[in-house]
Length: 328
Image (cartoon, rainbow, N blue to C red; front, side):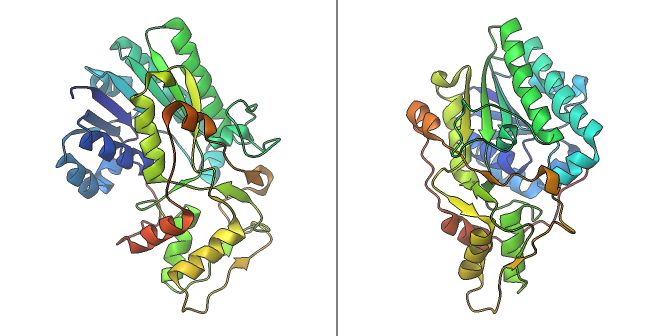
């Protein structure tokens, strides 16, 4: 297979597993990411490179020249690069707008310049805000509650706008719901709680603990990404990717971590009832949001298999959980 795929943000959590699957499947993959991200994950990326054809390229989506070089010869682009994290993006709104909107525009411009055939945009369940109904279908109105969500809505519109101006550029939009798994940094809740339980520390839940989400394992979700790039039915479509069968409140999730990871330790879930000291902002907290992935199932055959229980076991078995991510 000679299809060349550029993955922006390829050294990130979803990016690394996407790249792994594509390299194993015979794609010629270029991982485009910040130098510090590639350096941080160089061991994993080097292991993936042994499985097939992988090029590592340092660069920023705010640097048009490096993007133009990276896109040369590409057939398909998966745009995962973004600024994320509620507190980080709310504390640096202008930076979030620059990276997630201007950066996306730069990536799209580079794809058009080099005649790329398809562009896959990584959006987020955050675009649904506080939904009117659950589970959420793709047809539900978008209404961003955070600056991050607003930038993702803008990225979706930019993607559709480029397709109108340049009809030869096919596109698909993916709205990722809560994705977790091995290799995720411990600023994300499941990785953090597993790390805490292994160390004999009670998992702490901010708010009332009734916040409800659906949890999709990165192995399942990235299989969905590959299905999208290999099925022409996906052109011009938007899909939810997550796991609609794995719905939990935060209290339930924290208790499952204790039961699976540290059943013999005297641990309990600490529900604080407030957000003091959290990296969450109470006014922007989403209370209940979980996905309906039936559209992706009907069109692509997407059918996630990994339960939260199995996912927790896999995280606990990994050697190291990184505590945070690079700030740049």
